[in-house]
Length: 543
RNA sequence: GGGCCCGUGGCUCAGCCAGGACAGAGCGACGGCCUUCUAAGCCGUAGAUCGCGGGUUCAAAUCCCGCCGGGUCCGCCA
Image 1 (spheres, chains in turn yellow, brown):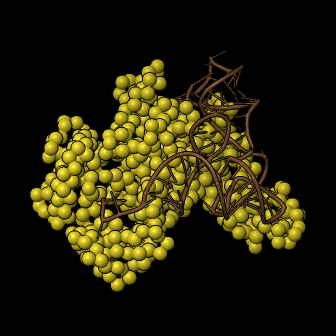
Image 2 (cartoon, helix red, strand yellow; image 1 turned 60 degrees about the horizontal axis):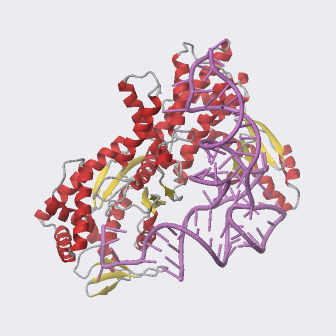
């Protein structure tokens, strides 16, 4: 809806209707700063230019009023816009959707299967999964991938660990982590075992059956645990792609063949590439003839590019250099490049996390702790044991997802358990609670909603305008690939509703005012629900 | 050493890419609001040289240059 308002503002401005000058504003529904630019060119004051422009334009479409203030040209939506917004929300099951087309591949999480997901991986999962949800809402044909690094040194070490220490009887990913950590310690004290690790890696790349079986077993175990954790926080993947698949399916060979004709250097059988703008050269094939991570990743991206219009990778910022090299090589090979969303590290107050050293907070542990805390808060309320369980789980999942989602990806985060356990404002529970409040009103009303824009108070009008922005924010996330702006929007919406809730009684209002407010509450509750879904956060009708 | 990212009230963050209306929230502090739709809420007060120094501009938290502090990367590892 809001997108239409923008369109109409541009239309209204006619020759001055450049989209880049149209902005959201706290003073109006929309504003244009075009007068400032023209003022600069014509050496007049922005106020005069804006006044001048105002005399030449007539509001069209949803634009009801245009004003010139301090050089800004402010737009206000008319009643029809408010009416159509509420109608769209109440009648369209898929409100928020915009009709975008295309096939999009989103690869995220892709943690090494050498242990459980920790809170750093969670940031990746939440960003990736939320992007997937919002991209789908935008109408795009989305597939999500988890790329399993099954050929790494860490897998060989894990297998070594299982052979030496077996697996404990606990959640499989945690059992795998223990074997992996023990094996690392073993390796530190017995460097001669290094050869064994190399041997395992070589055998695996050469598709040795027995080695494959061992790797596969370890990986399946780790992945079963990882998948259980992801499922619990509503993170889903359409496919799990194994790195080694690209050796078997010939894509690695394709890449190597394609590279041959493009200025590679060969030294003793090793294939090396010098990239302009990069200090170090990149090796794509070892002297012993085996491939490297980057070779297989190139193969994976070749495959992606053949099947998708847009590719998005959610990667930790430690992969930035690697990512730049990968993009450069893809460019040289003439292969369509992915967009990479880098997110900065989540560290602990005592420093960097490390699966290898067993220094991490697992996602499972975090979920349990947050859930216990949520239970304490609802202990005083009248809920059945079953409801307590359901509500605390939903609140915990929401709190965790939202905590990671709301922070811009490029911000480094230092994880603070006491803050994670705090359910004050600016959290998912605030939005969940707001939704429950709206539901509570609707449960007690038996009247048909009937929206009347002329009866709206300022807060009510503001609310409707905010609701109209839901599809706009879907659009923005798809374009900017920044899911945190959506979290911000939802918080603002919830806040506005709570303001309304305090000052404007619904059930006690008279006739058409009541019906009008019921319409607004219905629309708000629906949008909150849609928004929570898009963030993968459970919506609770009671809490 | 070089590349990249971050640095906004006591704390956590938004705003920066596409420069413009008094730098916005939340936590914490202080003071109010439940015989009224769920107080996990709402309202108010105090609190900011937007890391520092230059520059561009009518206008800079936002763009450019230099510096400082923190993080991260720089393997024939993945």
